[in-house]
Length: 435
Ligand code: ACO
Image 1 (cartoon, rainbow, N blue to C red):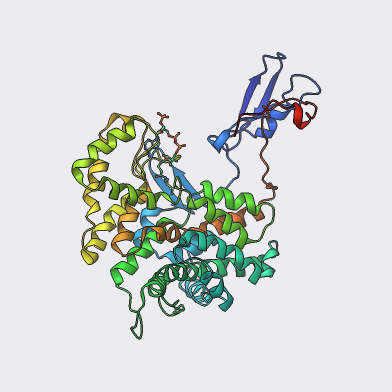
Image 2 (cartoon, rainbow, N blue to C red):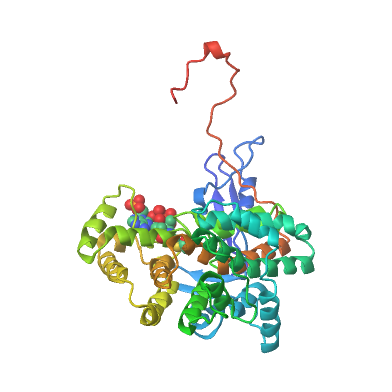
């Protein structure tokens, strides 16, 4: 709509302002002209947790949370999951277009030939305790890679940037697999470049004494589809961390370490780990109603794998995963916790508490069951999330760097603390009664 604008009347002064509306939004900075007096800083918007604030204009991922739609670069997630591969989607998310056969072959070659890690990284991982959480190892090791590739600091050199993006996408599976082998006290397995991306990861994690590891094609394909589903999800907590840290022009290794740290939390990528713990705690179908009652009491426990800031209907990724579960279980045998999960979903989707709050299963609700059936321990779930998500983080990071409107991310605050007061000598203090 041309010349769309919002007319605001300030009741403090009686003045009115026309604020332009573009892409369904006003610019928060346009509010600054609204002042109660000449010395006033100007009006701000207050939005803890960014509930209604767009921090960027993006061409990467589209989500319609009400209708359960997710598209990467315009392509519906269901079509990509059915017809594409992770490396093809990774190319798409970063470059904006699907690759030709030639482009895909070159991309695959590049990614699969950057999978090796410097031998020193091995000693770094070996220094962790045997029971270190692999996500802690991943975060630390990715940050440490920054010191191996000092050229990565040149974030404005497009060629160097691309090289380091490639390094990150390729090396994350190796770091992940080695952190897993470390926890088992097993020797680290080197990457095999002629396996697929998912097949190579499976090999580095599972290979024992066999001459050459041959992945089960169903499990290899299922892992690849799970990777596609996790590539990007616009401005979530981890991506916001990636953009925020990247906005100071920090190199992509430390920025990815920050994003992975955000992903680690139980409300975000750590949720699939929590789902499994919850299902185990419930244990059997008969105990589901009592558990749901407990959650509804609102005493802090949540139905993990349910609810989403954006989706107010069924997460489209959860639908794909639920369908794929049958294929995986045909190979691995059914995960006994599936029955508990299905009952939980059935009860929740018919319960007023969940229905009225529009709480539906999210991507993490079923992914953990598949990962467990494939033999991955729960601690590896967030790591398996981070491996493909790095493509999305990097696409978002590059978009940020090329966006002329972006500056260092630096929110404002509303200060509500003490006004100026004079220093009190220690013998005259009343004490704050904290200890
Ligand atoms: N179980 C029970 N109640 C819930 C749940 C849940 N999983 N999620 C939200 N609610 C309730 C809240 O208590 C709140 O109720 P109230 O209005 O009576 O206070 C209402 O629903 C709205 O919840 P918010 O916390 O305001 O929603 P928000 O958008 O901030 O949170 C989140 C979204 C963090 C995903 C939340 O739904 C949650 O904690 N889910 C469980 C963890 C999870 O599965 N995370 C993975 C998300 S997907 C991903 O990150 C890859």
